[in-house]
Amino acid sequence: MSADKRITPRNFSFDFPDDLDPKWVSGDVFRAHFFNGVSLTMPYLEPYLCKTNNDARAFIQDPELLQDIKDFNSQEYRHHECHKRLNSLLRKNGYPEFEEVERKIQESYKRLSAKSLRTRLAYSAGFETMTQGFTKWMCGKRVKLFKDSCPYITSFWLMHMVEEVEHKTVAFDVYMAQSGTYVHRAIGVFHGSFHVLGYGLLGMLTALKKDKLLWTIKGQFGIARMLGSVIWNVGPSLLNALLPWHNPRATYDPEWVHDWVNAYPDADPDCQPLVDTNHPEMPIPHS
Ligand SMILES: [Fe+2]
Ligand SMILES: [Fe+2]
Image (cartoon, rainbow, N blue to C red; front, side):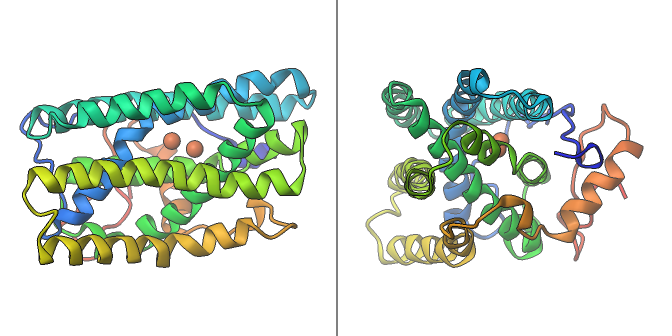
């Protein structure tokens, strides 16, 4: 990564209210439970990405890439700490069933940790590809998705996605430095993406079962609509990643993300960058 495109480890901390409502998306319980389900994976996934990067250090000589790994890990470590706090509030405020889902996720990452370094790096690069699709979707369509929703969780997710853009090249570069073969990278796109989405879906279905919505027509329709939306908005990024000449440097990022990053250094580093979810355009929080 060039000097003008630095990865900035920031204070990543949101004071979620104690009485936080797990159905935090205004008017769409399915969307809330989908993102809550994905959040359940993060305290296990993100440390796994950091550990995988660290295991690859021995294959890397480029000092810039070694610095990128350090900064990537710093961002991901802060993300997972914040997801952990959010997830504990989700459990406390209505969904203790998530504990069992998290136990399954933890077991799965234990199994994944025993895989070869190439497989783990391909998984990391593949998952990071999917986050680019999520960023385009969540930041680009933030008003449609999160208008009038809880500002704490909305801002937390959007800031997470901003930082995913900042470090979008790292997992790919590490994979290319250690192995670089196309076939395994392509398998990693499916492996990293569907593994996380699968457990996210399990979390979503667990919450909908608790809400007695799972086996209703409304529930089935809501699940189908939510999954259709994920496929429609995130799928193109996965297809793009399957191109043999794919490089995350060439992918487009929403303008809102760049505005967020460019405005951040002028903001108070201790403040929580809360987005005004009642604003018709939901501008960057520190404009
Ligand atoms: Fe992250
Ligand atoms: Fe990431």
